Image (cartoon, rainbow, N blue to C red; front, top):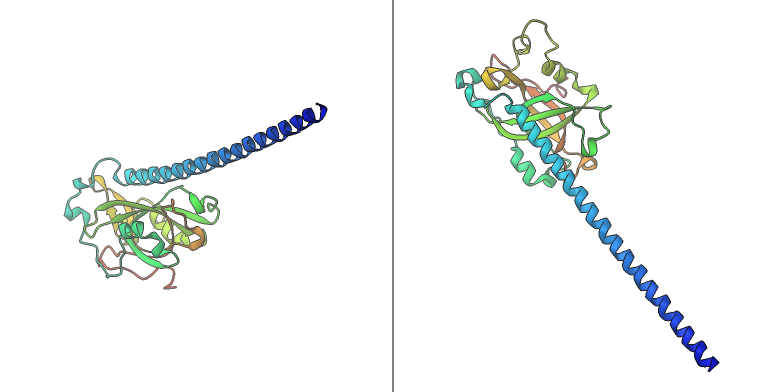
Length: 233
């Protein structure tokens, strides 16, 4: 009787042990599933944040009304094309094809204070720029991207953008640089041909960021592209 009781207790102990192990294992699986679900939610939130940033950029470009109020005469002559330009739509659709390569974008640019994704901690080394793509007729396409330029290279561009080159005179008159006209003929962004790259170490699937490595201004009088600001020196 004692032997049977001991065997029964031993078997019961094993069953309890295996039952607990199974529960613990199941709990581990559930925890992994919860972590995976949270990671997906974080990724989704990051993408929504990027989408909201793009929307803010577009609203900044279009603030105060629609660009249709600007006549063709006010907007200026068509922007000259050199044949090597890339549309932002192509970059968005095939971003991985542009990693580590340089490509040319044409549009208006302004300084803003967005530092996200791989550039989140780059405020000390880079200036953040809102770049709005522009059509040949000088109207915005609605496509935007955040460009980052190294602070030690940015002064000639930031000076034009901020209008710090003259007091009492418009930046356009002082600099001879063509600006994109926004609502009511108001100068919004200086026009540039931006030489851009996406560094592999800065790439993120959810990011809309790239690095500005050089730029050209459009001469207001001749309507021709000037020399590259950095490589021409």
